[in-house]
Image 1 (tube, rainbow, N blue to C red):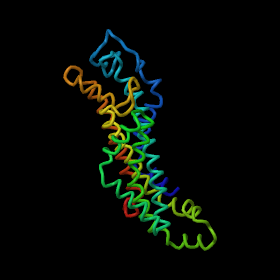
Image 2 (cartoon, one colour; image 1 turned 60 degrees about the vertical axis):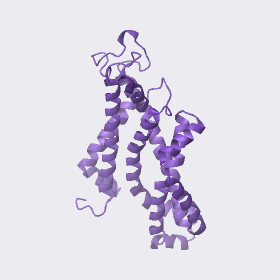
Image 3 (tube, rainbow, N blue to C red; image 1 turned 30 degrees about the vertical axis):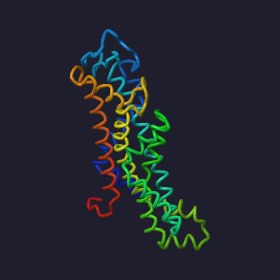
Image 4 (cartoon, rainbow, N blue to C red; image 1 turned 90 degrees about the vertical axis):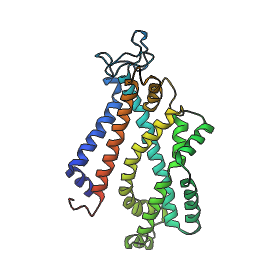
Length: 276
């Protein structure tokens, strides 16, 4: 409750939070906001410039770009949110186990983590998707299996600094089991600071998703998705630049909003912040 009160006193956080909610609501209610069917092809309006009927123009099949962006947000944001939450859950769990157990368990988990972090994540994701096959489910699985390492390292270091505190020792002496100690006494003190990392990683995962979709490894047509729309638009950069510009701007704005939201959360959670 303390952090909630601080958040509602922070104007920068409220603005960024409101913008995030607007983006999410726009995708949730895409069916109400979209002026056209995102899959409907109009052969009489191929590559049409922005107009009253088609606010962001049309693509090579005569589909409304604005409607496809609204519906594409469902795919892009759902994948980014799902990947971020899953990799955070896996990383935090492994990091807490490593930090609390110590010894051989800590060594094995962290050496495996170091091995994964030694290679570019995008290369591993491409390799996994190539093996598993394209599609949303396999893409989420591949990104999750590779991208949890940072959460493991951060949560481990925080658990090590917390597990010997007096209230944790008293809980152990009182007969509380290891799992209960981690869930009831350690996790609540670790999670608020990891929320900042989770929020900022949503934007990073959006960029990763767009990069993979450019290579044809993300959602498959005709499903609208921001990254794949960029892939379609790059072939018409000179004749129909709106196919590339508008999806790119939406991705850019969304990434900036989530990064700013993470920065404002970090300021709220920073005990050294003089304004709080």
